Amino acid sequence: IFVALRNEGEYAGAEVIQVYVGAINPSLARPLKELKAFKKVWLEPHGCNNNVVLEINAGDAIEFYDDETESWSLESGGYKIFVGTSSRDIIKTEVFQVVDSLQKL
Image (cartoon, rainbow, N blue to C red; front, side, top):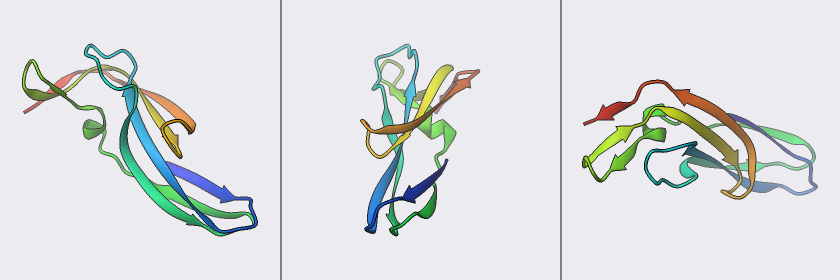
């Protein structure tokens, strides 16, 4: 996931970019957003840019532990990726679809 940051302020500072993933209509109760990656970056002042790349494994991002089957599962359906500076300060969202569900042993 690629994020472009720009510091418009007079002072240098740090920011933490966070990536969350959430199932849109899960079959089991799950959190709305789960933190999957984050990175702290330093931003110089006066309009300096910093490009951030966060890598997440697609399978790991959507898998969940199913207590009934006592195994890790991937569920088909819609998912959202949330990018922000916290779970409450979301800057961008994208939706993706998983076509087939798989079971990871």
